[in-house]
Length: 368
Figure 1 (cartoon, rainbow, N blue to C red):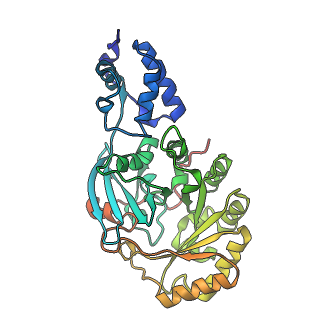
Figure 2 (figure 1 turned 180 degrees about the vertical axis):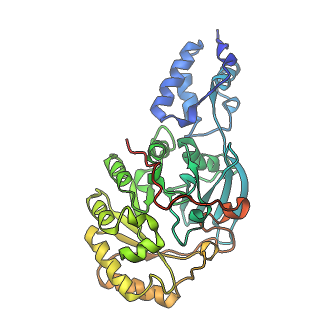
Figure 3 (figure 1 turned 30 degrees about the vertical axis):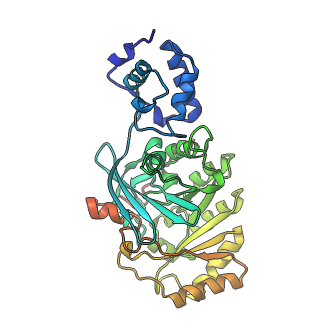
């Protein structure tokens, strides 16, 4: 007989915030406590992330009374889709509302058989990078594990679903300033008992938060690391990225050198700011120190904040200088030019800006 005493509990536990192994253990014990076989807990766990459903009531393979008991005891929260835009090139951008009224962005980028999903790790950002619309809106709060991984979950719940082959933490926020929650979200994305996306297909991008790089390096999975460099000299980097005062280039490059896996340098090309041949020479020197791959990124005009794109001629010349110094380089294609695809652009258009906190704000770095 199923015990429905849990239905009297006013507060429900968020089952989506647990690591897969913890969720399975909780659900199996819950099943036994409610008079059904333990394997029913495994059935529920599969429906959280592997083959997700919108609610416990949608798990048709479970007895009706057990579904009601689950709904009384546990919460399976959703992100609310507020806006969905699609570009002529196939790029899609989603604005999701959170329970507290805040909003975050997610971008799905198709490329042949690949579908890369760019997810957010914070609502807003404290870092105030000069060319980034997200930094201009100010920092609101860290996202919880389920809100981070839940962006991918929501895409799987679409009809028809969007199934990513790759996930990049390159959306709103600095993921390594929310490490405690990003750490769990990485497991939810990668664990075969959850979403099962290969670690080599998951990239964490950072401005160079050293404690977070060390924490990511300590994980056994082959997660990828991308470092936002954007300037090869400390003085210029401080102007573009104030966090460079706390984590200067030499320290960031040293951390990249000891990272066990290959590192990518992300470099947004800003016309007449960081795109000269001399900048390229200096960037090549940094890349060669740690064997980094360089990803040159055209500035998206939607989030340019007064900067201009480098010309095609300057971009090509910059890439040639790198290649001449045996640095592997790719020039990223601009995507979503006909929608609000720049990082933070759609969120700013819908909800406006906030006054950002200090540029050196880093109190939310969570390293176990």
